Amino acid sequence: PRDWEYFKFVFRSSLFGIVTLVDHLYGVHLQVSNIFTMAMREQLSKDTPLRRFLVPFTYGTIAINDAARVTLVTPDSWVPRAYPFDEEGLQLAWANAYRHLPGGVELKVELTERAFLQTIFDRKAYIDIRIESGVDTQYYKQALEYWLMLRAFVKGTFDVYYPTAADQQRFVEDAETEHFLLQAMGNLGQ
Image 1 (cartoon, rainbow, N blue to C red):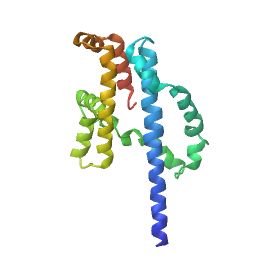
Image 2 (cartoon, helix red, strand yellow):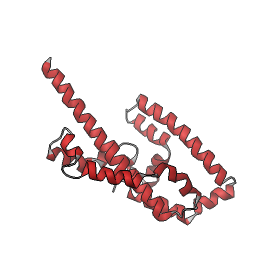
Image 3 (tube, rainbow, N blue to C red):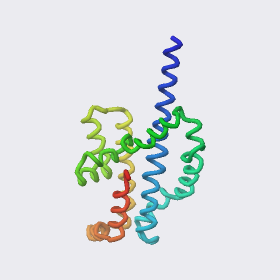
Image 4 (cartoon, helix red, strand yellow):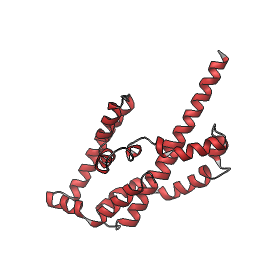
């Protein structure tokens, strides 16, 4: 019984370490938030509605990610000392983080460009892929529910800025929007 308890402890510690390292630190901080914040600041003028919409979601990102770099990523920082991996295990985790990143980015190498973009912008499409692969969990059901609420919020906000079909077409054809999306989507998974 004691060996079993120890095994469970090691498994939970390792799983917690990988999920935090891959999903949160690498996925949220070093990938998505950095990429979208940089693309927004480099490609969108400060008065465009898309940038005004994104600012509350990216406020403080640069400072937070810089602090994460200093306190969590560098050698002898918090993560290498506290995680349940030796130096080789930690290097393997960092080297393979992209391949284990959930959320659609991991499908970039498996899908056509169009299908990949569909899974990134349409969570239902991504969740359908996960379910078809045999992963049908409460997490995905709740994620879909949340995504549908968020989608309604985004649509409501953009309907204010782009109320007519002609306005929406101008947004779709806008060079700044195109450059923002090309930079952001092109850098995911790099």
